[in-house]
Length: 361
Image (cartoon, rainbow, N blue to C red):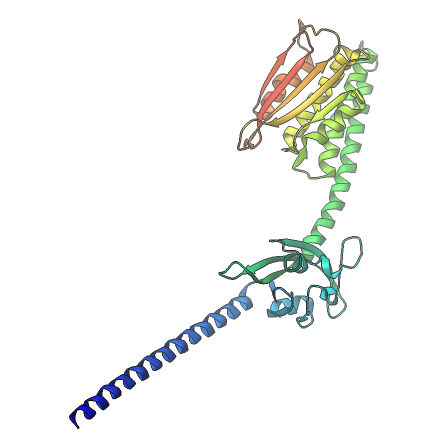
């Protein structure tokens, strides 16, 4: 009897422990569920407070599951729960050329369907009420802890005002370019009239006109693209090509320089080319020129340009320095904070410039 009682007590204790373990497990599960719900509520609140439209999709289908209220306000229709990457065509938008954006062109299709880690596209979007606005669509994948893609996040950014400002800027730049060209024309006319009746030769007049034309060309190139910067290759091509024709080889990385340096380089290239045509390698039918530039530091903050004349007459060091020499040496070095080296080896005249790219005024 005593043994039976002891056995019942032991069984009762075991059952109580199991019950306590179950209750503890259930309590932990409830706490975990509450934490998950709290996290979801936090994420939902965050989606509603950020100042851009957000759309979420699952992977691998690409089905759109939800979006925040700002996204709906921007597009002026409910979030379309597109079934997969082939059904985004119901989001009607157009490229800059007026062609409608196809389903596979949307960033979400690029990320979920093609596996890109980032995709972006500017579109002219047709809202639910029929009005249009420019919108930037940016998409990134969402990965789980096992490294598998679980979905994607799409950001919708209203860039309509930005686009309108860009259009206005283009109009202003075109007007500025027109006025600058007129100003250069007036300057040339004043110089020409001032030289009349003087002892200035026709050659001197032509030189002044050509230098003004080169400067005007550089200025026009800057305005035609970005007012603050210009590409070295484009500066060289615009300045030298019409002088050297097909006898110049240009090679170098795609490097932009500030407008101040671009103007100085344009004038220097002009002086180098005209000097080569008059006295250097281009004065010979077999002569040619090589213009090369490249970075000289791993940080890509310094660049070296090299002008080499080949297969022409042997160069002769001049006994006097003219205005052209000052442009290619003293003025250019001062404007670029760089160092100019000029050499006259038997193989041909050589000019080089090493300058920093990020030097502040």
